[in-house]
Each structure stands twice: as C-alpha cells, then as structure tokens.
Image (cartoon, rainbow, N blue to C red):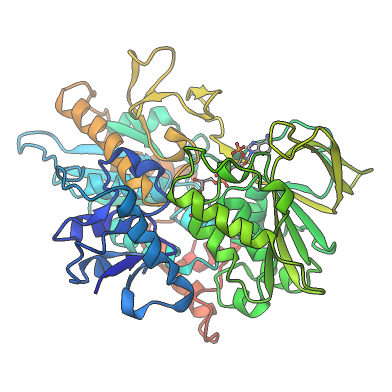
Length: 545
Ligand code: NAP
C-alpha cells in the first residue's frame, strides 16, 4: 500500500521532512520545487507509515485504498512523476537551523504583512531562541490570502491558517493588527525599534490589459471579485452584474479557474464554504450559465495547474468544454511533459463534448489575444484576435457578447512610500531578499522582503516556506555579521507610540475574539465553518475595540 498526494497540496513540504524514507519530491532544495504544481509520493518507496498524512496541514494526502473516487487519478499522477524523475536521495532539505549565541543581544524583527509569506517568516524566526518578532497587518484579521484569496470552497487549503495560528500565539511574537505602515507607523520608525524589517506585503495591484474599453462598467479585475466573495473589508458592499448569461474571464491562471468555478457552483455547495454572505446570496440569484475562460496562448502554455483543471471536470451539473479547432499542438513538442500531457488530454476530452441544452458550462478558449472591450458606458462585448502563429489560427477578429468581464491576468506589488519598485517584475527591488535602491551591491541596511512582494505572484502557499527561509537566512547573516545597527528604542516603546495614533489596535487576544465570534455566527449551520465579518466596524466590535 502507498500514500498519494492529491488535490489541494499546498507544497509547504511538512510531509517531506516527516517522511522517514525520503520518498516525497520535489524537496525544497530541488530546483523544480518553486515551479512544481504539487508534491508527489514515490509508490515504490513508500513504507505506508502515514507520517506524511499526519503532517499535511491541508488534508491532501490519502491512503491509496481509501481515496475519494474522484481523486483516484492522482494515484497515477504521483507514479508518473517518478517514472519521469526517478527517485534519488539527496542532501537534507533546506530549513533554517541557525542559532544565536548566548552573548548576543535579542534580535528584533518587524514583519509587515501576515499572509502566508509573513507567517512562514515569523515561524522560522520565532523558533530561534533570542528572537522577538513584531507582526503587523493593516487589517484586524491575519493570514492575508489564506483568508481573502484562497477560494472559499478550498477549505482544506484554508486549514493552513491552523498552522499559522500556532505560530502567531508564540510568546515571542507580538501582533499589531489594524495598523497600517505609512499611516500609523513609518518604515523608519520600525527600523528604529528593530534590527530588521521584512516586507511581506504581497502583490496587491491587479495588472491591466491596456486595451480600449477597460474602463467600462462591468469590467473588473478578478482580484476585486475574489476579495469580494472572500469578505475582504475593502470590498464590502460591492456589486457585480451577474444578470447576464455569459461571463468572460481573460487569462487562464488558477485565479481565473477559481472565479469561473465559483460562478457556476451549486448554491448548496457555496453554503458549505466560508464565502461572504452577500456573495453567496448574489451568486444564488445569478443568471450566469456560461463562463468563457479566454487565454491568449495555447493549451501547452496554460497557466492553470493540472489539479485545478481536473477539479473543473468533476463539477456536478457543469460541463467543461473547449473548441477542438483551438487545440493544435505538435506531438513532438519537447514541452509535452507529464502534467501538460494530462492537461492537454483533459482539454481534448472537453472539446469532444456536445453541449447539453440548459446546463451550466465552462468553456476553455485558447489563442484569444484581447483587442477591445466594447459598449457605451457598460461592457457589451469582448473582441479578440485569433493568434495567427498557431496551426489553426488566422488574424481574424471575433467578438463575444457579455455583460461581465474579469481580468485574471496577474498582480504586481503596490508602491509603498520609500521602497524601490522594480517596474519590470512588479516586485520590490531586492537581491535574495535584501531590498536595494540603485544597486544590489548597496542594500538598504535592515530592509528585506519576502513572498509575492519579492518574487511576484507565483507558486502555491507552501512555496513561501522556501522563500521565507532565504530571506530569514539573509537577516541572520547580516545580524551575525554585525551589519545591522542597534535599534534606538525598544519594540514596546514603539508599540506605545503606535497605540497613541491608532487606539483600535487588534492584538492577538482581540483577533481570537473576532475568530470566535465568526465561528459562533455559523454555529446553527451544519456545514458552514464561519460567518465572516465583512466590515471593519463589525470586526472591531467583535474585537471589543
Ligand atoms: P497567473 O498564473 O500568472 O496567470 C495569469 C494569466 O493571465 C495567464 O494566463 C497569462 O497568460 C494571462 N495574461 C497576462 N497578461 C495578459 C494579457 N495582457 N492579455 C491576456 N492574458 C494575459 O496568475 P493568477 O491566476 O493570478 O495566479 C497567481 C498565482 O496564484 C499563481 O501562482 C497561481 O497558481 C496561484 N494560485 C493558486 C491557486 C491554487 O493553487 N488553487 C489558486 C489561485 C491562485 P500568459 O501565460 O500568456 O502570460
């Protein structure tokens, strides 16, 4: 018997270090780790000890004899990985195992942003004796994209919050939530009270297409749609026009697939998630029957991952379709590796269906280069050009009517006063996590970055574990090398200054009160894990602030 990693793998690699026979790949030190769609267990080496299943924070590891039927394909997916990448035992996976010597002063680090990269950074720092961490977030609630980005129906993925909950309650971690850097405290002030400041502020700005009509009503970024259905307080009360039959989503990354899936998910299934109440109601009343996911390139270049594509093939009452004329590919193409082959097969299978009358459907379209969004005041249609470089392509324009368009074309870091942005990558300018202005040789002492702010919007939640290890190594190297100056005041003194400016600071205890109140609000529901507060006022009232 063997264990199998399936849908929802967060790649945090907790299973890798738990495995006594080292049969899970890729490991954090492997070059392909950062781009891997998920981790895999070698069926020939697995000794059936269940250590990986016990450690997995998101319940993505299954006993092969006890798998849900719709996930059985992952048995083959795990085995195929090792057929292509035979198991070789290599050196230990990378983890931060540094210690500070007893005669050093306490290392004080402020981490700005409590999403996955911030929490993994806090985790790795706060495990080290002699380190004190101040964790700051502008919202009263922690966990960033785990709360406001991960799709509400991916409840197992949201379970990573349970891992982070254990981290932020450590005695050497001090939470200052509802505190905004640039408003209630400056980066300079944080540096005055800490040896190092790590920016874990994510990539919060949606990219734009730069085509005519993008400003029309009914054209939104998927970022706004995702934040709204997840109850982010910046988006409370927003309205999306879901009265049309067809929605077009531009881009085919996992964000596009999340948005498409949730638009056509059965209302009872939505009720069993932590989706914001007004979004559940709006989707219940929606008239959407068809979601077109429009990619500018072909099947082999699709940005979605195989597990998320497979999930679309298993939706009750929803068909996954594609246009067979758009699936041109070269069978000798060297990029036809394991996962892309599978991806292609599923799309081909979808393309062979004849749509049922009356059912809901998601249609995967390829080689659709956006040209314009059209309408007077409101969007009425989307025009795209068929990419002439693909076998079946021509330079013709095609127009699809639609009243709602989501741009799911990626994110970039939002500018932060005083921090250098690399306009090409849309990230903070840095080298291995050390922020620099003009030259990487001349880093800003004590300033670091991690997560999407550092490497752009890529990877899954656990990818941030490795990213955080690199940044934490840089902080420790600089501290132990004597590069970082001694702070002028204590972290407690700074906290008192911040409290005078922001009386409604939410500390760890106050966050726990919000968390408990949200769970109580859902206590009557047999399936709903929590009823989220979606406004700051509600959150602060629950926090007693
Ligand atoms: P993404 O994976 O980078 O996908 C962006 C998509 O936008 C691509 O299809 C890209 O096409 C397209 N695009 C970019 N510029 C375009 C333009 N000007 N015109 C037309 N299309 C354009 O980004 P994402 O979907 O926002 O996801 C961000 C990260 O979060 C990814 O790492 C993703 O895997 C992760 N995520 C994971 C999950 C999950 O695991 N369930 C869920 C959500 C997000 P090209 O490829 O042609 O550039």
